[in-house]
Length: 204
Image 1 (cartoon, one colour):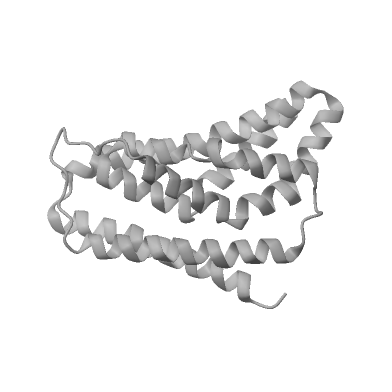
Image 2 (cartoon, rainbow, N blue to C red; image 1 turned 60 degrees about the vertical axis):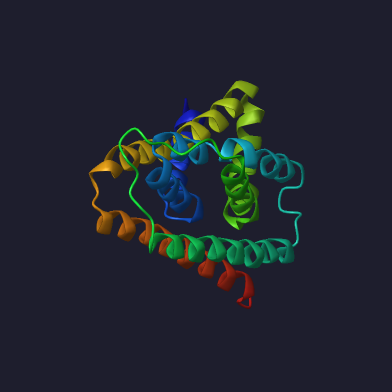
């Protein structure tokens, strides 16, 4: 139970913290509704597996340069997505009721790339997740699985809830409100990307 509560608490903090993936979820929910948003909300279930496995295998052994390069490359990619979203918002039309965005593999792959190039999951699993998992595993494998399950349940669940809220309200927005919100999500992406790149370039 202790490990489960720890996973739930850490998952909630990670799920609601503003960042690149959260901004992508908002933008996708505005464009295509709940279905589009929920696909991106569940991206950590796809992208975090290599992060978790590598972190558990070589906890703390990764050089600092690796994380810094991830910050710069990932940040620049997120800035590109943000600028593209801002440009799109200038002429975007609000979706009509009943209109949804078709399934987009490219959209999901972009979100996976953002998450893999984001140093935050790496830093979390190297510094917090892997040590907590190892400690829970020493207690029992079920405790370790409870920690991971609780973490991802709330991490993705909080983003799914946000996708539902944004998707449900998008038809009530006027043209100006829709474009402002879409442009705002693009601005959040741009700022998040700039911060990531700056942290990677800043001297340690």
